[in-house]
Length: 176
Image (cartoon, rainbow, N blue to C red; front, side, top):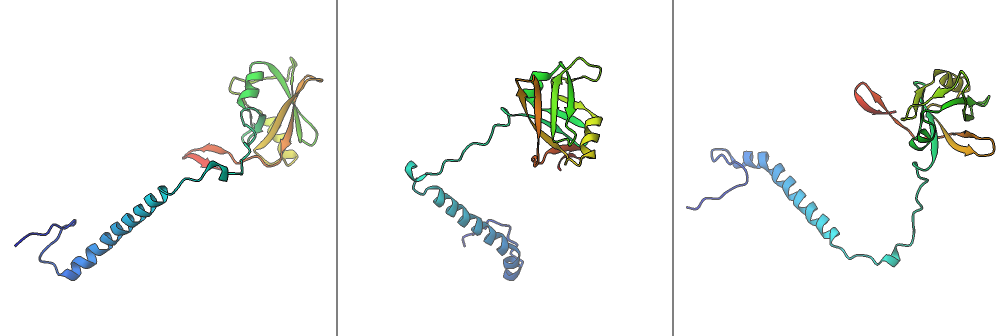
């Protein structure tokens, strides 16, 4: 008498109904995975299309690195992106807003209310946060900044819909 090897443990004292009920779902799942694998490998070996059939070329988005930005968050942090922070870090600057808080101005100044930003471009400015809240500017607020050569200061214009950001919480990163 020859022995048959099964891919699962078989108790010869059990009824065939018990074996069928216990192991059939596993066997079917394994068979399903094998079928899906064959379908996936079959799709991967299809013919390649010629380059001429790819006619739509996607335009690249504006580079986040090349544009200059200032973001103001709900905790009062004013954060400049890397390029702007490199330009202004260590210099005494004055931050000004228009009456409606739709525009900001960053001007080099040695006055008593000048602020020096560190290299990372982040500073907590509670008075800026209060001004934005008073004028119902949605937070986090983003200002796209450019340099006005004629007048010699940086001007930022409020962007209405900044993308969502991630903020650190006590349990780790959490989408806002």
